[in-house]
Structure formats: C-alpha cells, structure tokens
Length: 165
Length: 118
Image: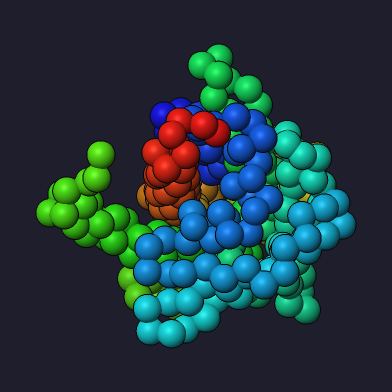
C-alpha cells in the first residue's frame, strides 16, 4: 500500500498527500513520535537525519539536521502547534529570519498530519503541506531531483543484490 | 545544483504574486484572449491605479504580458509561468512519494522481523 491520493492547489500553494499504510493508527503515529523512526524515513538516502530535540507535545519543539554527501548541514526547527495522539499533528516552521520567513532551507511553513482507520484495516495518513510564498521552494525541489536519481540507483542496487525474502 | 539563484528569486516573485486573491482572479479572467486594464478596473471595487498596481506585480513575476492594442492596454496571462509553479509542486510530490516508500519499507521490515505482529 502506498500513496493513494495527491491534491495540489497551485494558487493556494498547498499540497495534500494521502497514503494508506500497512499499520495501525497507533503504529503510524509512532513514525512521527519516535525520533529514531522519523530519522529513518524523512530524509532521502545519502542525507542522514539526526534529531536533536523532539518534544512532540502541543507547544513543544522539534529540531533536526540533515547531513549532505559533502558534509554540509541543513538545520530544521518545527514548532508543535497541536499534537493529539494518535490522530492529529500540526507543525510549523519555527526557524524564521527577521522578515518572518523560514531561513532553514526548508520551504514548508505548516504541515497538518491526520491519521485515520482505513477501510482495509490499515492507517490512512494525510499530510497537508502549506508553502510560504517567499520560501525557498527551489531548494527543496533541488533535493527532490537528487533524491529521485538516488532512488533509481537504489533500485538497481536492490536488483543486483537480490531482496531478502 | 540544478537550480541557480536567479530562478530562486523568480520563484519568490511568482509566489508573492499568487498570494493575493485579486491577482489570482486577474490571472483567471485574462487567460485566453486577454483583458484590457480598463475592463479589469471596472471589475473590482478599487481604483484604476490599484488595479494597475496588481497588474504590475503580475507582470514583474512574468505571470502576465501587457501589449498596446489601439487605445487599450491588453493584459494576458502567461500560462507557461503558471506551469512553472505547478512543476515545483510536482517536485515536492515526488519528495513525499519517496518518503512514503521509505515508510512502507520500514513497516515491512518490522513485520518480517517480528513475525507479523505490529
């Protein structure tokens, strides 16, 4: 099971990605609530994620950094606007410059994540991302392209090695 | 790096221009055959100068072109620039699809190692 729906609104600069996961709602919540698990899926291969602070409570704060293949460090800081386990999570870019714009190279300004029971017994996770009009979306996109290329390389590797049963 | 500084500044202008509802409406009505500035001014409850200002923001972002047609200044939406914004969101969609793939792998690996319990 995987991504089941993607809704993009170019004018409102929002995107909602819905995925059906082979897990319970509680288990899906842990993908965000457990920093060790979050580290394993947030960043693209080759960009290890290291969580620094992880206070996933309303009013809390999450900070982490990604390390690029040339040792460069990308820092991110999120404010936890709302955390109602295991169904609702709202995060906002917390690291902003003097003009109130995100300055951590992360174009996301707000993310609303909901978890619900799917018809098939799995968890339906919906991530609604709102982008800031001034944000460096190009930076995120550049990383996306790089990630896309890495995915192809990974797939080739997996075929060569043979996926364990 | 695929993207240079110049295009990042262009993207900033595009998204700033799109952030206003009047400007988004102008883009919608000026797609196709175009719309004169004076006709636009009649459409909105604001001064001619205010509408002109909105058109200037859109023009600066490359979202509309302006041309002289007789005594009229014709505003026309540049569909290519809108497409550019769409491409950016497409790139971020790919980012999320890859994340969900990794989540799927993580859950599948866990299931194998715990014998199907979750």
